[in-house]
Structures are given as structure tokens and as C-alpha cells.
Image 1 (tube, one colour):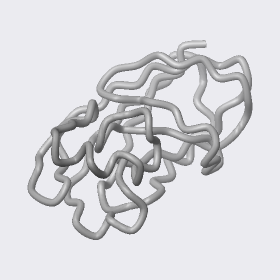
Image 2 (tube, one colour):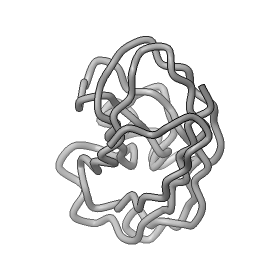
Image 3 (cartoon, helix red, strand yellow):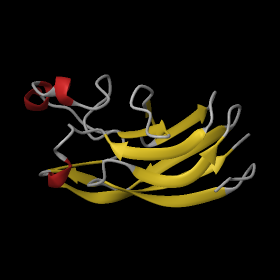
Image 4 (cartoon, one colour):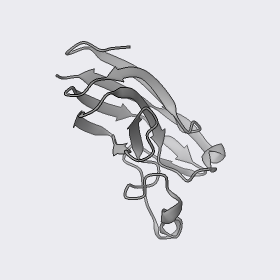
Length: 128
């Protein structure tokens, strides 16, 4: 689906899903505002879209899908491109320089989505 300027849509991003399709088609030159609310859980650790870290989890940092970002941070990718992840977090404005369908996920280790629970609500507004 293609959003018009100033149009907003609400989607749920599930913690268990390696890829959550928003079905939003993004084009080069467009700008979007993202606001994520709610909490999701990584095994027993409840957190928001900005994610978390601690000394124990730092031992596993090399296993994260998006290594520079916190555990369970809300991440995005166009067309599931694993070379170009970007941080969405709780609140972000992003200008895009390429086309694709927006997919989102919790930043976790591959193969460990089975112990994730809950979902976030993501408001996506096209600004430009």
C-alpha cells in the first residue's frame, strides 16, 4: 500500500516474527515519522522499542542481527535487505533514498525468536 502525504497507518510488530511486513511501499525521496508504543518481551526481559542491554547480553552482541543497535530495538529494512537495517526505535523520522516494502523486527539473535513475546504498535506517517 502506498501512503499519501500526511496519511497515517497503525501496524502491529510482533516480537516472535523474524520479519513483520507493514505492506507499506516506500519510494526514494519520501520521509516518514515513526512512533512505537507498548512493550515486548525477550524471554523474561520486558522492554520498549528503544531496546536494552546489560552485561550478560553484551556477551552475545556478535549474534545480534543489527550489531550496532541494542537488543530488542525496533528495526526496519526495505525488502528484507539484510545489508541495510535501520533503527526505528520509539520515535524517529527517516528520509529514504531507495524504494521498497517496509519490514520491521525486534533486534534479536537469529534462531532465538521462539522465546519472544508481545508486540508493539507502530504509527507510520508519511511526511513528504
